[in-house]
Image 1 (spheres, rainbow, N blue to C red):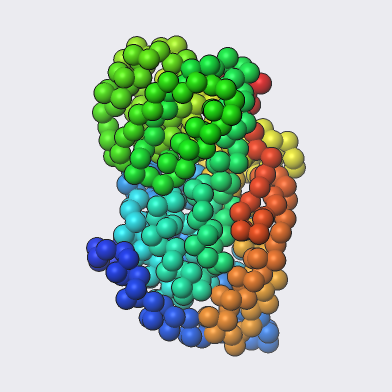
Image 2: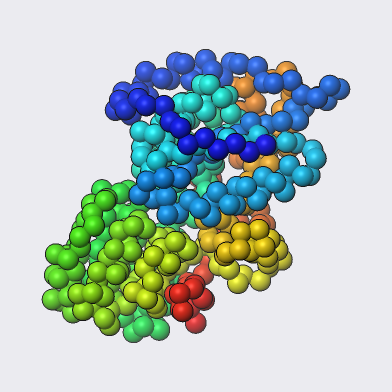
Length: 396
């Protein structure tokens, strides 16, 4: 069963105050009993899960492929006929407050056993503590921000931290693009972008590439002419962009209009999004980025995944779809292994599921071979890709 609800509770109090006030009610919610399993069964046959992503707002550009992957995996998993997953999907409108509101709803009212999402790191740092204190497992499928699993031992992810694959991008830029002078521009009020900026800065220095200028912007900015004019004046051969999708598109398209015709773009996860490549158009041609997953990876699970996705949606998946699809299968595996009893309380069920997820140390999926470390962070081989002819290809 799959349900999508884009309506949201309206409270807009500051999230730290709300977290403190809500803790007791969240813990009490965990004492509720689970719905009864089918007659004669010792374990539950339906598991209610929640998913919260930005279906609207500034970062919604990332969410279409995530929603598709959730839908496709859910259909396949429920067709297996053992444990049925009842997945509730909510829109957080790209905001921290709405992510908090959805978490509270899932934890207190819906009694979900696990929450997928939200989309970006700032939202996780805002809403994640609610789940940790209420002891509700969270599976992140898109957040590459460093440190999010440090919120607590109920936070898991299949999304690969960008800092682990950024050095490979810089290496390719130096070898193939002959980069020697780089400028950086980043969103200084977005935790993911700041972390990515720092990782790129360290990798550039380690590679011996001179950083000739650093410029900043804020989330929601649309005019980058001042920053790009300064960058143009120092004549870099490479511009490293650490921002979310809408801002990254604006920077690239405006840079070309300002005459930065020969500068090469390097980016992070935003560059891997199908929507970003589409919206940036010709301005993004030749751009480099590192990705934990790529379309042409030839292991059987990925070949089958890409084939099914294309048949179902008439478009290509991206790394977010791959991470989300694998996450759904990992959670199903953990649910079955947890052996949640029909008489278990919601709190006991959540605890069993957490322990079952923590016991999964490796998984072979669409991303390839995944290894989870002691912080519950995934590690994969990954690849460096570039935009060629409006599509991603392996950078060779």
